[in-house]
Image (cartoon, rainbow, N blue to C red):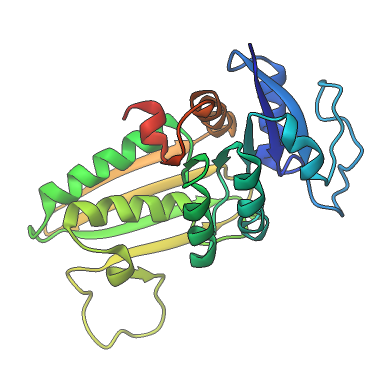
Length: 265
């Protein structure tokens, strides 16, 4: 029996990649039953890959026939749909980044009624790196290492820094036993009044070309630099992670899950 999938953000880069991967049978047992985009999307009424399904703006029309909704839309759409998706009782895989505090609250409330996988990055490699970064932070705590995160993405990416960079920052912060919100410094300019704080985590965003996703976390001290990096060369890695999450999520109890739960990392 197949798991029925609807994709929100079907006209975007990730949406199109998800549709293609489902059509190619990249993850067994998944069936596309809905493709949703904004009311003004140029993709409305167009075929969603070779599935025989057309892109629509009416999520309510396709949600009842879905088992899991995969969401790679904008933060406003994701936040606005939380109550509806919870009421429909559908599983929800969220890959949307840039979600504000009120959106986080809405997602957490929805997770009391439905199972949700919410992750800043769906790839196996990145989620393995999250675990390694937490270990590195713990091992290097109070040993004189400065932490800097540099992320690079294509010119059309709207949110900065990336959700993955923030996820990496939170992972390091857990290892250092601090909160990222208390120590993060986003970019630098001008003349600093004081030297770099020993506790801060620098986060820097670069935008250009068609870079899929490139992240480096640098631990620098006197005499050496340790770097942990991840470079995505295709969006397929994120799509496959999201589809595996959807397959894993079907039938789960309500709760807020991460890709570490899905992948067992």
